[in-house]
Amino acid sequence: MKTENVIVEKSKAFALRIIKMYQYLTSEKNEYILSKQVLKSGTSIMKEIIKNEIIEREEKELRCRYDRDWTY
Image (cartoon, rainbow, N blue to C red; front, side, top):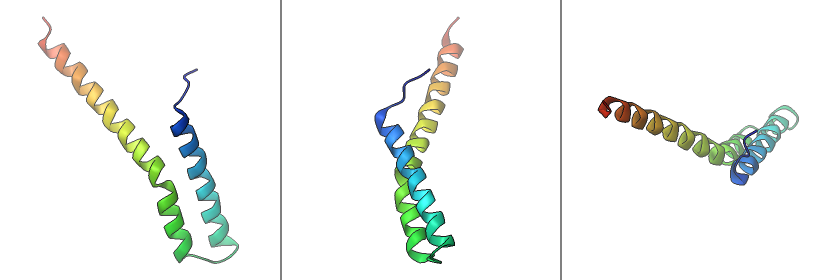
């Protein structure tokens, strides 16, 4: 099993807690404006991590294709 980065693990746990808090605020307290901003801010770190992982994966695939095209 692959060990993940501590930052990724903590960011994921934090984002999940923020999502649960958002669900609680909207369903139990009928608070929509502040809860939406908390959701957006609280999940932005994980969003950036995922975006960077996708970019890294695509760059790796491009490098593999480039290397494969230039080897004889």
